[in-house]
Every structure is written in structure tokens, then in C-alpha cells.
Length: 629
Image 1 (tube, helix red, strand yellow):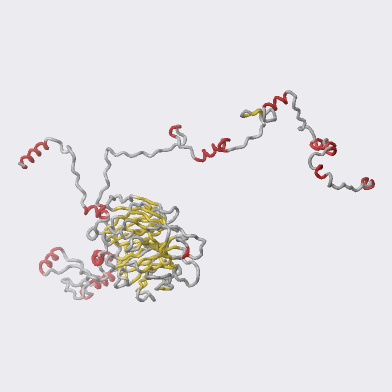
Image 2 (image 1 turned 60 degrees about the vertical axis):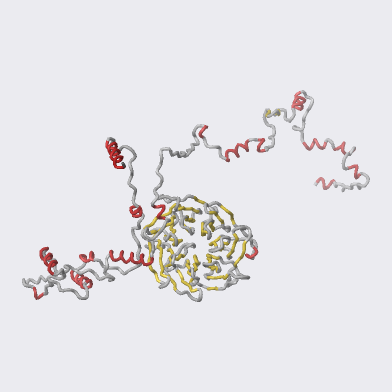
């Protein structure tokens, strides 16, 4: 029955043109999608420079002979066409052939291959020698990656920031990534809801005008901590909504233990690895503080580091160990101090390493087994410390330029490797690198070029996704590079890369942007600005409470200006001659003196009060001679 229906359908379908109906589009294979994100160059560890066979024609004939002898095996097989010697010069003209002989004709090659299978031409270089070609280099790189399972074959970039990305946090499930930048913003990415455009679904500005320095997820991944250059850290929920902001201390109190919070800009912060209600912050005011997330107004503990001389030296970084029983802090004087959390513990450190670095410490990292501590500094070094003997570092890795105070260190999921990023220097030709180190052998394993023009600041190796995150940027751009391998990694970048962006439908509606034109019709004019409203209010006498001006004109507002008075009655009386004003033309001195006789005969105010007690005035008699003079 099914075959009959198929035949009927094919017969009907043949009557219509081939373009009729909905055409099924072939889906792009996953292999083709991942080929678009494949890294063009995987930077291998540094190797000695090798001479390839392509370089031989540019050398002299004697040099070619020497190189050929180097490439030859120890026990070569006899050559059926031996090289002629000077004694073999049959012509006697002195033209002796130097170097390997030319290959015999094709017939001889075929015969020799059929007879004894001899190889014609110089033999292949031995495996593992310095004369390997590029194929052997790529093979060794793949062996190295397979040995350590480093996912480096593919790469995507989460863009959106306009400056270097200085903070990075990936939640424990690997579905959400939060990045912070020097452009004062925080962007949130969701691998499950993101398509191949790799756009963030939320953008925040925690503190206006302050750089984002650290982001840390809670153990349950329902909240995250955001530390900026301000003195107050903020807590956000998983969707980016603000849950609270910690209180700021009083900057006029000298003793930091008596302040309610930090009084200067924060440098670092980290959530407790086991407890979901406890966080740790460090600040430029020279203190570390432990907070309870449920109460943003009070702190649980204030830790003041041990200093050689009294003062306020900034704490540049802080870290918990795996169980949250120890706290490590990097102090601005170059020392590393570690506190054990126990009943009745105070600010005195249990471990104090002076002059551990010559510059500010940018990151500290405990191993999961609690045996080693890694430290990264602005002096361009990475040091490995044994927590049982912290007097001297076990290993020092130099030549790792670092120009950012947020450059961190990360472990691989099995902790066989640890990695860190490098910054770009002015005179250097190398870009931002991601350096991998072997923990057991304490040696550099690989250098991976992330960006030729941008510095690498933060890095992370997610254990569930098996993907490496590296943030990079400079003064004009920033992004988060995600390195993965389709054969080794899971979910994460694999999910969003294979998801094509949604196609636009006919029914889609987009609101067109409103274009404001200040000289358009009144209907389309911009709303009046506040400046215009203020100017209009100042001109209004009632709104501005402006006092009445004196009358100078013919009259205004019910007042007659020509009357030289404020009332209409006075104006009419003056016009009828009933009121005469002569004070405008009279001398003020004469006007006062004309009442002198009346005041002397009948005093009204001051003189009667002192009439009985006032002594008689006695004036000196004037001398006529003196008056004449």
C-alpha cells in the first residue's frame, strides 16, 4: 500500500515544476561549522630552528653536500650510481661533478624499483632530528596536545567591550560567562541561549566611572560578586539584578578595625568556595574583610596584615584555599601573608614571606591538594611555593611580561598544568600569549598566541566544558577568547557555534529610530530643554518673585508712572494744585535750618528729658584777633 502511495505522489509531483512548493535546504554539517572556527596557527613550544629541503638550492654545491651528509642515515645502502671521483674524469677537461649525481632516466628508475626497491635521491631525515620539516612539527604539536589534552584546535571570541577585559568568571555548570572591563561595564553571556553571533544578553555598569576588577560566582552559581575600583562591592543574582551593596566605612577613623567597611578602592574579591553566604575582599586601604552576604551593613572580620612600619600599604590580591580554611593576601610591600581560620584567630599571619616579589602581586592561587601556592606579579615572574616550606620558592619562571594588576593564574582540571597570560611590551614583536607549565616537571610546556596586538589578562580552564577562556584587549578593544576542541570539549562553545541566528520573518516588526530635527514642524520638534525652561522662569516676575521696579514711564500694571507717586488719588490732587511739592527744587540744608528757632523754643523729643540735669554749656569766647587771622 505504501509503495502505491509513493508512486501516486511521484506521478502527481512530476506534473508540477521543480521549483514548486517549499524547497528543503541542506543543513550545514558540524564539521564544516567547526572548520570556520579552527585556529590558523597553534603556537608550539619553542624549538631549534630547522633547515628544510627547500633551502638547499639557495646554498653552494659544497654546502649542499655537507647538509646531505648530515641528513644521511648512519648505515647507508650502496648507491647503484656512485659519485665519480677526480680519477674518473675520462674527458680530461677538469669538469668533475660535485654533489649527488642526477637521477637516472625513468626506465632505469623503473628497473631498479622492480629489481631491488632501492630509494633514489637523498634519504628522509631520521625521526626526532633537528632537520624535521613542518609536518613533523605539526605531528609533535598534536602529540603534545593529546598528551595533556589541551583543547586548542578551535577558537571563538566573545566581543562587546571597548577596552581590555580585566575580570572573568564562568559558573560551575559552564552555561554562563560574566566578563568585566576597564570600560566600567559588565557583560553576561549565556551559551544555551546564544547563537553564532555571540552577543551578550545583558550589560551592567556596577559603579559609574570605576573599572571592574574581579568577578566571582557563588558555590551554588545563583549569585556573583562584582568588585570595582570603588570602596563598595556589589552582589548580583544570576540574571544580573542587583541584590545589594556593601557599606562604606568612615575615612576619618584612623583604626581600620573600627570602620564599618572599606574606605578606599577595592583590589580583589572572592566568594567562599564552600559557604554560600561568605565572601572575602581586599582593598587599597590596607585591609582584608570577610562579609556576610545576608547583611550588607556589617562585616564578620577585619584582617590587618603585618607591616614592617606603621602605615597603610594596599592589599593587592586575596585568595581562599580549596576548603576555605586559609586566606592568602598579597601585600603592597611585596610580601605574601597567609592566615589559618581557627577559633579566636586574629590578624597575625601564620605564614609571612617578606620580599617575595619586587613589585605588586597580581594573583595568588592554591592547589587543590593544598601543597603549593602560585604567585604572579607585575615584575614579570611566576613563582611556585611549597606551603610546607615557604622560605624560598621552588621554581621561578621569568620573562612573563605583566602590565595589568588583574593578571591571574589558573590550573588545568587535573592540575597537571597551570597557565597564565602575558602582556605586550612596546619593543617586543610577540603578542599576548597563554603560557602552559608542567606542575610535576616545573617547566614550560607550550606557548599559545592569543592575539598579536592585545595583552592577555585573565584565564580559566573549565573542568566540565574542557574549554580554555582567555581575556584580552587594549585601550580600544576587548574580548574573551574561548579555545576548544570538538573531540575533547563538551557543550559551551560547541552549543552556540552550531546554532545559526534566527531568520527574519515577514511578520517581524522593528520600531524605527526617531530622528529629532530641531528646525522641523512644531509637531516634530524636540522637547524644550531645561535650560530654556529656566530662562523662561527667570523672565516671569511671579515665578521668579522679582520685586517691582520703580516707575519711570507713563504707567504699567495699574500704576500711573507720570504722577511721580504710587496712587491715583495723589496724582489727581497734584493736578488740582492741592498738593505742592517743593522739595525737589529746595536746598536740603536750608530746609533743615528753617526749623531751628522752633526747635529751640519748643523742643519735643530729646531736650525735655535732659532739661533739669543738663549742665549749662560754656563755650570759649572767640578772640577777634584770631578770627581776623
